[in-house]
Image (cartoon, rainbow, N blue to C red; front, side, top):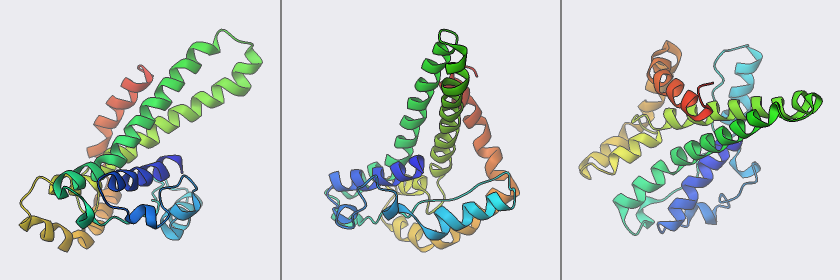
Length: 204
């Protein structure tokens, strides 16, 4: 919830700074989780995966509404708004990585009861948070519509390709689903994920 909500708020906040008040007017520049909940993507789909015992738990928050036509600079606004969520997830991964390292150093220097009941659970939470945020960042940076990476790439292309990207965005969901359940997506994400995970946590 922390990872996906801050991801979406970041999109809306950067869009607002770039001249688009759509997310702000819709009440989406808030850390209150309720406005960001997508009934299917946030609740039903992840719940179904959990009930079925799936090794993959997939979901999303409600996308923040953005109108690029309001950007003062269309290309710059599109690029910065697109990468805002990914950058936020990377920053969260680094934050939780630092938290993990601090807790790791504390474990041997405090009462064993405190270590076992407080510090170690927080270390586990921090490590899992690093993993979740890295997965979200690496997944969203893939340049397949409607993922953030496709919009970031689009900002560098000629405007004639923008309509093409938007036209085939609906098919992107099927491509992503196919790559996800065929295991291809995992093979793409896994190498950089493992590298960054060990880098941030200090070789754990």
